[in-house]
Every structure is written in structure tokens, then in C-alpha cells.
Length: 159
Ligand SMILES: CC(C)(COP(=O)(O)OP(=O)(O)OC[C@H]1O[C@@H](n2cnc3c(N)ncnc32)[C@H](O)[C@@H]1OP(=O)(O)O)[C@@H](O)C(=O)NCCC(=O)NCCS
Image (tube, helix red, strand yellow):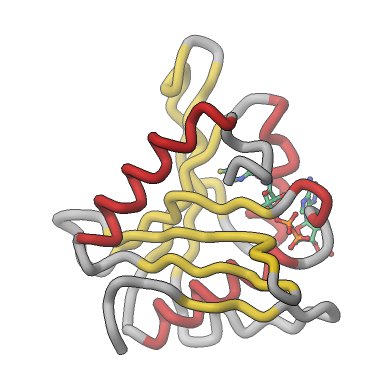
């Protein structure tokens, strides 16, 4: 996530703690994209508490030099495929409304996510929460892509 430029190096401890806690819960999914022996991207999703099969796409990041080459699409496709296979209903993504995240919002829109909510000044003053959503219909995640990346699953839940 640090190589994706989303987080600073000093956030490494925080990220590790968040991932450890969620993976220990046994419910979440963490997938990595691999190019040769290198991890080039990661996506992490977890179920929303007290909902009927709603999931939160908590983090996605692709190595800075490889952004725009199809890795993010491959990761999203795989996480969607897994959730559809498990009969899950809805996938939500929370991002930022700032200019810095314009490309990120375009990415989700391009992948068929709908912007369903905005809360002004949520993250901090001048930084809105933008929520994208996708219904996990059985065909979701089976989009064709001209580029291919292998995606490995390392979720804590077996099966
Ligand atoms: C957002 C991110 C995960 C997207 O992954 P990616 O590998 O760069 O995206 P892809 O190459 O798979 O792109 C998939 C589609 O989205 C479009 N897209 C991706 N980035 C885009 C951008 N900045 N502007 C417009 N469209 C974009 C691509 O054109 C592509 O469309 P196509 O397949 O029809 O040609 C990646 O750029 C990243 O890690 N960004 C920094 C971290 C971040 O913002 N994470 C999300 C926090 S909420």
C-alpha cells in the first residue's frame, strides 16, 4: 500500500495492525496480484457488521510504476468473483472527493460502480466521503480484459 503511494512509510505499523486484526477475525479477504515473484497490488475486503451480506472494499493499491496496466481491474474482478461465489450481495467502496482521488473515482466508475452517497467534510474539512457501490450479480467480476495478471488469495477464511 505504501508502494501504491496511498500511504506514507510511517503508516506501515498502522497498516500492519489493521490487517492483522481483520485477518484474525477470519471473515475478510485479502488478495494480492503477482508479477513474477513480485507483489504488484493488493486488495482487502471485509464484511460490514450487522448487514445482510454487504462487503466493504477497505483497501486497494497497485505499485506506482504499474498503475494503469490492468492490475487494479484484475484484483477487483477476482474479489468480486469470490464474493459472488459465496453468495454475497453488495460491495461498497469508500473513497475521497478530493482532486487527488479523481483518478481513483474514475477507476471505480469505469469498473461499473455507481456513486451512491457523499458526505461533505467527512474525512476532514474539505475532504468528502464518496461511496461507490456495486450489486454482486452473478455475472459481476467476469469482465474481459486484454491484459492478464495472476491473483493469489490469502484470506483467513478457508474454502
Ligand atoms: C486506483 C488503483 C487501485 C487502480 O488500479 P490500476 O491498476 O491503476 O487500474 P487499471 O489499470 O486496472 O484500470 C482499470 C480501468 O480504470 C481506468 N482507470 C484507472 N485509473 C484511472 C485514472 N487515473 N483515470 C481514469 N481512468 C482510470 C483505466 O483506464 C481502466 O479502464 P480500461 O480497462 O477500460 O482501459 C491504482 O491506480 C492505485 O493503486 N492508486 C493509488 C491508491 C488508491 O487510490 N487506492 C484506492 C483508495 S480508495
